[in-house]
Length: 351
Image (cartoon, rainbow, N blue to C red):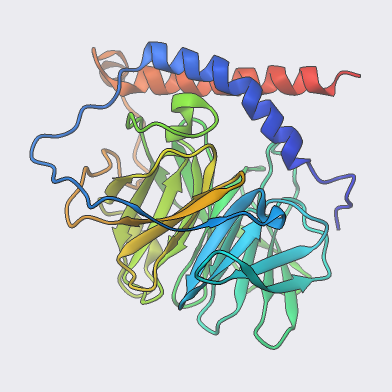
């Protein structure tokens, strides 16, 4: 079990992101023009603020799930697994805990039996030998499942809980090509099982503002959600959400389709996403206080993601060099963000 000293400090990481913001944002904005709106795309209904989180215990809000008229919220950090229950005014009215010191909790999901799943999957330095899923059951019992990637360590901030209770972990990649993993064997409480890669989700630059690392934030998946009625699933970046229809528990099949892209309100570090109780509206929030919990309608039609989930080969030279292609800008933005975060981390580590 990692100790408090072993766990990466999310606030220190936040300072590194601030170092990266000016440089990466400047580089990306100089190299990539904003994405043009497609003709005939209908305007989505305006987002509305449900309430605002002001509780210091949720200063780094990274996971959110709407359950009926309440919400469950997860803070990025802490010395034990903690899930906060919020009322309709964003006030903390309940707290569930497990006596485990997590490494880097990032996202939340709710299983078919009402159990709460905490994705302890963050790994900014890609150094973890295992990741963990913590389960808080309605009766107060807790479970800890450890998992290993088949292809080395990844940073991951998104959890998709299929209606049949299967967890899917989606990685956060600076080049916009994220892996989707699920357990390859039955989970064992206190034990470790392997993950298998079952899909890839590709996103590209959108021109939507927001996030802590400039345009590179348009490529990084930071949260996931499944509608309570099982009709849809969603993944978000710092700036946009992607919504797929879901049939049964076929998450892989859903991700193989074409999603609807929804531009999200500008926020400093948007990571939390859920579906509202109606399963047709997204609910999003950001780190930092105060943090608006905002309802974002999903239009019947919107700009579709240009590259749905697939395992196909990458783009050829023509696509990489085509005038106006977003790929060079995406590569530069990601490279710039990665470089300045690394440089910032080296500077911050000096005595």
